Image 1 (cartoon, helix red, strand yellow):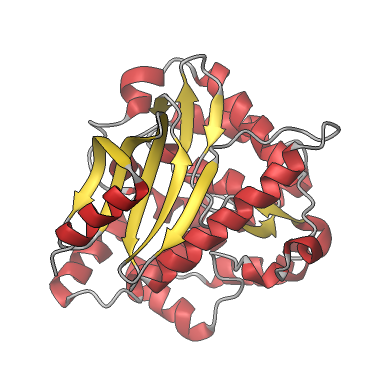
Image 2 (cartoon, rainbow, N blue to C red):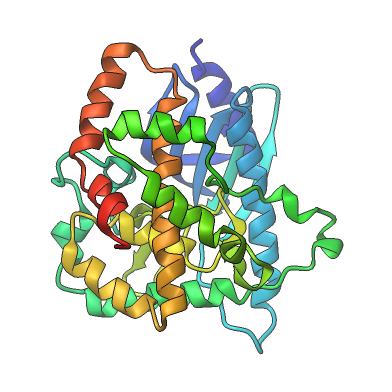
Length: 322
């Protein structure tokens, strides 16, 4: 299907002035556009209405934005620095979300950030921010602490807490572990026993906080004054206190100095260290399971299998907490 005509009709309806495309695919119906509406700079993201998960996550992001906006109006609470959602909508073809556009740079380009295996040639960390970790990383930690202080009132919002489904698995069956061991060519008995032993404490109410759930470097915007903003809350949920810290640390794998600095800033006690290690195990195992469940062609899956067996994440999983 070619979505071009329907997409142009949507732009006309929304009165969007096109400026720069970050992503444009007429075949899949995915569009990310920096543009202008009524002289206001905006970021427009458009997806096909048939993409059920993306539709749900788009409305989840809008709800998360409303929760955080309410939090930020309380001057007694720490301000959560984030991009602002302006509108969410849908028609018979698309669902879309419009955010205010903030001039600055993401820590990495979106595609490069999620590519665990490709070259680093497009990384904004490498080209723009390599020597500025002491300025940037404390802000990331501070904003995470502000996010963790959020206390939403679900009754006022008219939603259940379960609306914000956790992104990563909360337990692993023996069948899933066997599949993971085949993918990674290793024994995960120690890792699963370690996770299962602390599972109840890890998910206890005292350790559950608001989490962004997708704190890749591409979702951190560095403004011209070097103030940071978190962006893209479509995986927002309430999860373990160290989940976002561990997730961001994992995606800094190309930059050991940044990892080391962020790790030291994030962890103040043995309890935090324990939950950090548990989160690393949970994230990597969940991520790898998603590859197993992706129904790839055999040749493509074998290629991915080789990638994972060679990747540093595998070493983190096997050695980090020991």
